[in-house]
Image (cartoon, rainbow, N blue to C red; front, side, top):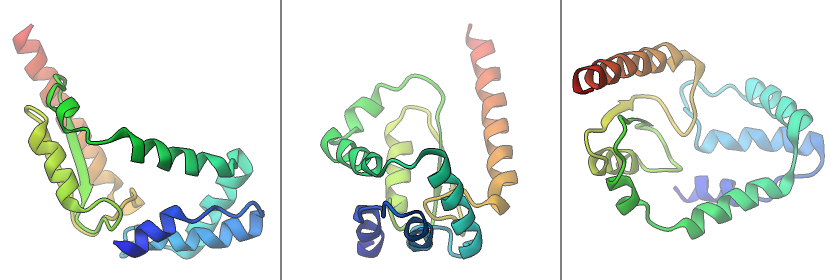
Length: 146
């Protein structure tokens, strides 16, 4: 959405307290059902203290913008892939996850209700279970074919 893109493009504040408060703006792309403003502040404080580098976000966004369409490269992926995407993602539309899974040969897709552009802790068991099951099936498939 436009609001999610606007939040993404904002220059992160250099001041610790402003940075922490601005983290609540991430709600725009987060899983609305599970978003906890206090938890967002705690994570932002830990992130700021651990590794704050304001130019990093700008550099990462610029890299995404100049990288172009990845469709052709994705078609050449030959390893098992599980695409996990949230139906409530406002930063990357759910059709992006569906398109990624559709173009990668043999990819599996897990679309999660109530998940935005984050990994909310209440969904971890479902996500971990899906990854473990996918890994087991990929290993079984590889064992049969080698």
